Amino acid sequence: MLSYRELHEAGMKRIREVDAEHLMDLGAETGAQNRMNREYMESIAFEMRFMGSNYADTKTSFFGHEVSHPIQHAAMSAGRLLNKISTYWEEPYIEDMAAGLMEAGSWFWAGALGNQEMQRIINMGVPTVRIVKPMSNPGWDENEDIIRALKDAEQRGCVAVGMDVDVFFGEKTHDEPPFRYSLGPKTMEEMRRFVEATSLPFIVKGVLSKQDAVKSKEIGAQGIVVSHHGGECIDYALPILRVLPHIRRAVPDMTIFAEGGIQRGTDILKALALGADGVCMLTILTIAYAGHGRRGVTDMVRVLADELMRNMSICGCQTIEDIEPSILWMPYPDRNRGE
Image (cartoon, rainbow, N blue to C red; front, side):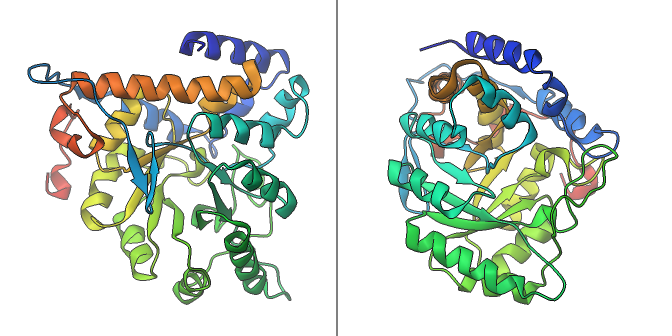
């Protein structure tokens, strides 16, 4: 198995060769949100608990499916960065990445993919989550198309479905026009209708407040992804790990994934300690794929899972259920929020 350093260095070398490094940080306007997110994550420290500890077990489950670790692949589709680095690998590269995830025991989260491409991924045997976009075009009932997509995902064998609510008003990269697709907001009634259209667990992706978390539960969603869409929602977005414990307290029974800026096993452990059930990662897996293709994806997930296991052991957490906030030392309390 290749090391984290080998995977990262090889991937970044190729990303620079195709002049794509600038595509790795695409936050809105000033891009402050990704910097703030990372700085807050790095300000959280661990205490060590060796006495009585042993090698940890990273197994957990999502929606009744047992997994060997809580590391998930963030929802993806073809994009500018992936299109550039795909010159090193044979098409179809998204299916190649999905195969690497399957070998590492992770799930594949599908974004705007064609049905046939998604079916080929499902046929590999990798558990697949379908995330649909809130399409909205004047003169066309996009809700019916969305419902058909959700039902189609269920019939094809997906393990869960969901929607990106953080793109209601478009994605924005720096000062580019924000509307890349015909997107638009959906009412609570429309969202409830989407949830009721499928028997699969429904995930609301792009939650960054306890208010949206509570509303997600109200419409019947079973899971949420705490995320600001890689910084492409609003400048100066709240750091993921700062809001995460407030969201966990607001919806204690929901399945919560944390997404955004997570790069190492220590980051994963911090997210789990602050209330996440799992994490979704994309950038670091894209880097690994750039350098070593399918093998890079598999090795990076395994490296991160090994890091998580070791860090859990050092902090006295024998299982995922043992992970608790007290292993962390936070930079400052949120006194205005009751801490």
